[in-house]
Image (cartoon, rainbow, N blue to C red):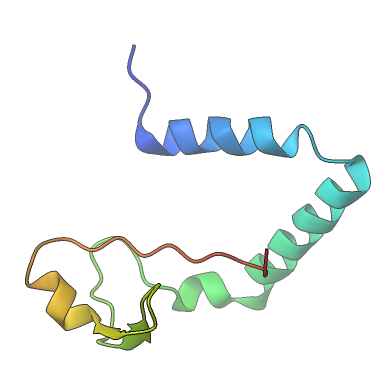
Length: 84
């Protein structure tokens, strides 16, 4: 049976978090709960919503505009928290 993308991501998250120390997991759970209680989820874009146009630097430092990327098809944005 094939898993949906959400199911696959949840399974990966659980596997990753399972290797964390309990105190680190507790910090992440508290942070996620605080975000949920802040009301930010109600203001976040929902599936099917259109993101406002913006530009950000790409990996080479060149400005890239969302509207330009959308001309070639769907766009996936990935945000990395922290500075590795």
